[in-house]
Structure formats: structure tokens, C-alpha cells
Length: 277
Image (cartoon, rainbow, N blue to C red; front, side, top):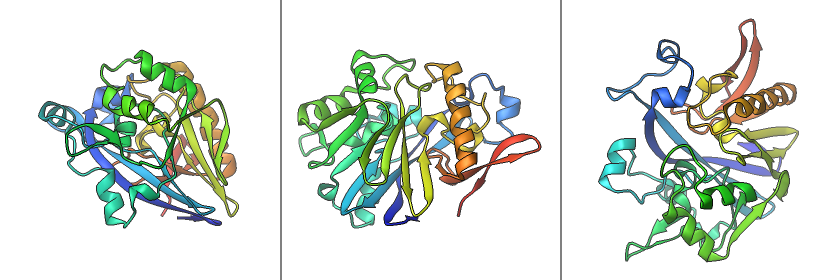
């Protein structure tokens, strides 16, 4: 997609599956199963979409997908794909060393897993050797302190090499990261999750991360059991949806397995979404 002088390329960061009940929290299965299908273990398929943003001579990665540092047990539990972000970058002819900035919405393994890779000795090292990595200060503090509801979602093999690299950059609140690219706090799923906004050519692209992970989560109460602050998540979503409708934003619902770009629409039954081609 083109947003004025900003080019955005959508990349596959890997696939996983998570329990359907956990993905929809208080919404009962007879309702959520109308919109998504579960496998024999009650898991639903999810994508992890990574954005390559090219602006003002810079190359920025938004999110990093699942990564590839998993044992057989994890791969079975989460139905993890072998494919990960580095494979997509290679197919697109993009050298990881050409990336100068990475923005992570939060540090759960399915968003930050690709920030490090295993070297020839099996040691976890930064995937992007020249890039600064932007996270919210509060999210980093919570990740290091283990402030979570899902055991193991903040993983040492992702965090420790990043900390040791000296390339970690923490931001507070709203901040411009590059021309036309900014971050916005989205508390709820984690206390300090942030969304990423891209503006150019009179258009807006917004990545709400796990505030609205899939098109099935557009409803205010259609939230996850993984959300640390469910009520605050609902109120944050309400504000984002209202802003999206008012500004005609394109939303990147990055874990939707079928499509990643959507537009919020208001109808007789409330707010829904439609694909943006």
C-alpha cells in the first residue's frame, strides 16, 4: 500500500493457533464459532503480520512475528509454523541489515519472537543488527518483571539479547518514530501496549495490535482472556473504533488468518468491519 511518500509492504511473520475460548474471553463458543472455526483441540488459526515501512530513505519493521526459536513441545502446543519473518524478508529481497528501526507494540512471544534469531551455535542474537528497537517504557519494565497472565509469554531469549545489544529505545506515550510514523498508547491487553500509526497522502493506516487482533474482535466485548485489563481494553477499543470511523482509517488486524487490512463500518447492528483491498 502507498500512503503519500510512504510505502507499506505486508509480510507473513509465521502462523500459530491458540485456544478459541481464551481468544474470546467471556464470549461463549456458540457465538464465536459462528465467525471462526476451531480444530479438534479447540484452537483457532492465527496469522502474525509484519509491516515493512519505507519512508524518507528509512526502512522500518513493525512487529516481528513468532520467530523460530522453539522446541517440539512449543511447536505442538501452539501449532507453530516453520516459516517466520526472516523467510518473508528473504523472499522480498530485503537484507535484515538494511532495517534501521523496529517498532514492537508489546513483547509477547507472537509479536516479539522474531526480534532475535539463533546463530550457528544456537545462541539467540538480534535479527536486525543495525536497528534500534522501539518499545514503550512501561511494557519493557513489565516484561522484565514478568507482569503477565499467560506463563512464558515474555521470553528471555527475546528480551536478554535485545537488552545486551544497547539498541533498545523506550518511549513514553505518543511519539513520532519517523516521518509519518508514530506510536499511541493502547492499554488493556497489556498495561502499556502501543499502536502504530502511519499517515501520508491524506490517508491513515493504524495497527491496533492485540486490542483488535482479528476481524472477529471488533465488538467492544469481544476481547481475550489474555487481556490483563479487560475493562480498560474495552474502553480503549471504543476510542480507537470511534477515531477510525471518523477518520476512515485502514486497520491492520494483524492476526486475522484470512486478511490483514480492514475498515470499521457502522451498521444497524453496530460496528463491523469490511475488507480493504
